[in-house]
Length: 224
Image 1 (spheres, rainbow, N blue to C red):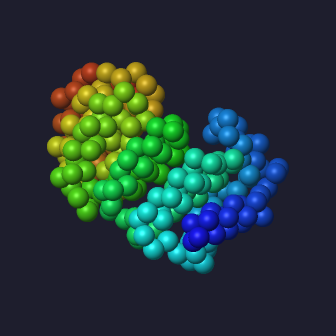
Image 2 (cartoon, rainbow, N blue to C red):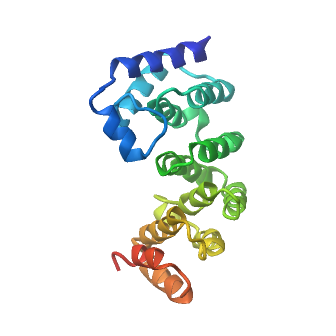
Image 3 (cartoon, rainbow, N blue to C red):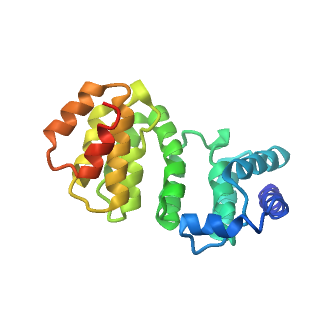
């Protein structure tokens, strides 16, 4: 019953926090077919945390059920943001068992807001299970779905000196010729962030890959 109470509490709180005037602009900005309630992401996260404190999820199974319910049955996009916020709960941190769920969220969410938020969870997996997670992102880097490829490329964002540069190169290289904007942008973003830690490595990578798109190259060298 905990899951049902939690999901209900989140939905009710989102409804109470709704801003009908703001919602259309939010939907237009995200180019979303799913409507918005008009609740900004920081507020969604506050609502989700409060509901989770009142109805704590004690097992991985409960977490996955709650996330899938909010995500798959979402009537408003904020419910999916709440589902993503639940994944930050300690019960799910660094758990490889959730990888199929992450795959599902990336491919069904199929937009940058969802995929980029999921990258935080994959970064946690890199820390907890580096060998297994490296294999996962290598597989994603050649997946037919370009959102999985974007997720693989940005999966080490924020890891700074813990980032594995060889793995970064491995997930970028199969995608260098991809013409998809969100893949090219991801390549540039990942390289730009690593340039804050190892600028010479990034300069060398860009020099060694003249077939990088102009967008990826500009983003990579933006602060160098």
